[in-house]
Amino acid sequence: MGRVQAIAIHIANQIHEAGIGIDPKTVSRAAELAKTDLLSDMVGEFPELQGVMGQYYALADHEHPDVAAACSEHYLPRFAGDALPKTLVGTVLAIADKLETIVGIWAIGLVPTGDKDPFALRRHALGVCRLLIEKNLPLDLNTLIGLAKNQFSGVTLKNEVNEEAIYQFILERLRAYLKDHLLGDKPYTVPEIESVLSMNPGKINDLTVRLEAVRSFNELSEATQLAAANKRISNILKKMEGKLPSEVQTQLLRLPAEINLFKSLEALSQKLDQQFKSQDFIGLLQNLVALSEPIDQFFSDVMVMDEDLQLRQNRIALLNQLHQKMNLVADIGKLA
Image (cartoon, rainbow, N blue to C red; front, top):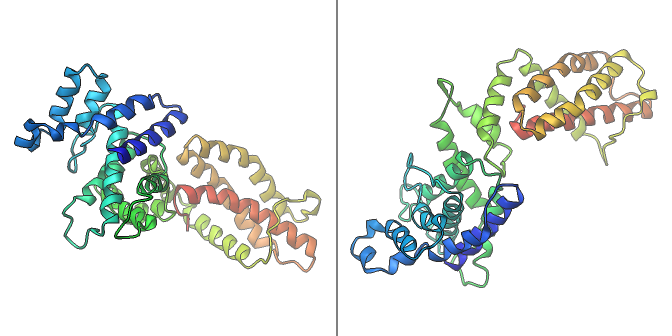
């Protein structure tokens, strides 16, 4: 109970800081009471009433309605397609309880293998994914795993808790979850899913928005050439030694193609940043298409590795700025 309570309080504080109304004290009280009905003769005789009786007992003791609801809701979802908690307190407690179970079972060496999953860790992992996505909670999955692991400090563990392995385990459930969902009348494809998961996202609440943006982008005629251009820019920058220049000196822009690319990027730069911040991923990708022609013209007319060191460094700086905007797309879904 203490471990779940500590995880739940941390999550409640994170949600509160994100501007979502929740009282950490209510969450703490819910965590304190959530498992107490397991000690009752009623649940001992009828195990299927766990949580149900907890809610009745809490209401009978005049606890806060959200505390009572969480006593039942923290078990949700019990299976694929099951209902989610209605209250935010129940949602937070459900995430905390499932994470504590996953990390704890991992720590005692009972990691699921093949078809064997006696403690239903796959179901718990799927539940965490559903709660974060369908409740639109901007919580970082890696941070949550680390938070759960920290609750076991000072405890002698059979296995070292590998946070990355647990993250990848949850990511596998996330893949299965996304494959079962539709965008319009079409399911998400494996390449679309892999494009958004290839960056190992921490926050997963906006994945469906990212998938929609990736599909919209891939339907554009310029998508392929933009992807190729991004790969070419990446290859050039990887070959550069030392710190990459990032400040473009306008007086060193000599050729029309490099001047045009600089002006096009400058005109779009602030808008792209704002669209990424507001999660207007489709708009961002559509605006990025406007750079397709200037990029192609640049590579057609401009020798990046010019013998003049100043010109070369200035053109590298321009490509570096462009690459940073391309990285916004990489944060949505892998471009190339």
